[in-house]
Image (tube, each protein chain N blue to C red):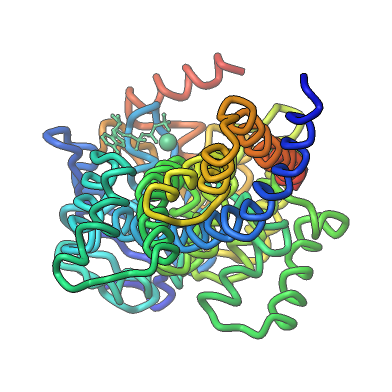
Length: 219
Length: 252
Ligand SMILES: Nc1ncnc2c1ncn2[C@@H]1O[C@H](COP(=O)(O)OP(=O)(O)OP(=O)(O)O)[C@@H](O)[C@H]1O
Ligand SMILES: [Mg+2]
């Protein structure tokens, strides 16, 4: 490898990593947090069978899971301005990723809630608790434990998916890499370097996930 | 109609699952302090009967009078169901301890959340009932860290902490290894001695003989025969009862 290329890679490493730390990670964290809260609501209204809300949640999950993330980003960022709704790119991306994560995570949570044995509910009723007390104090804590590994996988998936935000002008890692590649005519090296940084992020998360899973199991 | 001591009176309790009649009009009278032992073959409706009493299962027909208050099961209100549950405790065959709570928390959960007791008072009472079932060294253990016998004793402690008028036991020892059965039966024997009103489904015939004030033999969702333990075990009047008792004694 030529010295010039080495230098370029070293230089660009920081230039790609910084938007990673300042954009990709905040985008992931914001989206996942909001998405998780959406998922909690969407899952519980379905489990509780609240009329109207349950159907709404099913519709939401159906539409979001049945359409590509990229198309959703375009609808929100390029489509809505046609109706006078103009967003800055970052909040638009947060909304789309949160709504997307929420749909998948709500299915994970719903399955986890339903996997808690019926006897846990019955024991709660027998000591005089009501539906919501049992759900929040007995069932959800157990369900979250079950849902932890798949939710961790969703989070790791989201880190990678945020690269799609480049298409709606969010200057996250991938966008930064594209700009350098266009300037320096070294697309192969630069995109490999970008892939490596994503790999580092995801490896750290995977390690963390494994560590926390072990801790949860010990409890 | 009832003796003044009447605690629980059930008249014509019926339950169908689909088209299958599981309870065909069960009657039961019990006074305060009575220990009713329910026996019968598998599928005879023993569990369903207990579950209908506190509405874990919705019965189709019948009248329940509990501690002087009458309930018609057919159009029972949510509020009435919670009043019934307040006056009954339930001990499950597979314990059903809250898996995310310690032994002590299992006992205090209902006290704090449903009975609105102060946490410190609930914990004091919780420790007291755990002591009573011989678990003073296991307050902070999670269910998966306890043996089956210990789990079931927590299950009993959880029920008695709420001081119910009637405690319902559904085969409390049948999920246990044989060597752990004794410790649970001992706790239940203490409760009987204390004068607790209980309905117990069990296959432990010796235990039934010792604690029961009344034994009921159920088959195909009907009370075939009822009487004192002596009557049922020594001189059963019905052939079906005799057959059943022979089959369980063969089991050892
Ligand atoms: N949820 C249910 N849905 C449909 N049928 C049921 C249900 N629960 C019980 N049954 C049926 O009702 C009948 C009585 O069951 P139940 O569990 O009350 O019997 P049991 O006397 O407790 O038996 P065992 O000694 O095996 O515990 C059985 O035929 C059973 O298959
Ligand atoms: Mg049964």
